[in-house]
Amino acid sequence: QSPSKIATDATESKAPESASAPSKNNGDTSFANADIVKLVEAKLPDSAIISKIKSSSCNFDVSTDGLIRLKQANVSDAVVQAVLDCKH
Image (tube, rainbow, N blue to C red; front, side):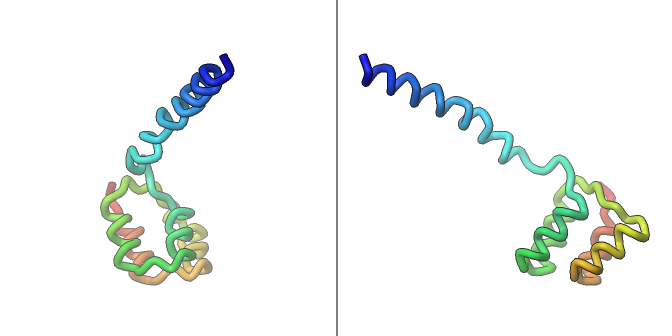
């Protein structure tokens, strides 16, 4: 009985993982300032970050304080401009 119980437990524990896996790959619902900062900290090139901005739904804080925080996080001028230009 123990081997079948183990197999059942293993199957049950895998179901939630596979159910959550598609949600990780569903694409972005929005892309925000914090996401830009993460990509800059990961040292992705500006071209990759700008491509990501252009292909995502954008939810950027383009207030004065939001833009200042981006610059304080060493976000390049080109990426800041892409943030400002985002129309998604």
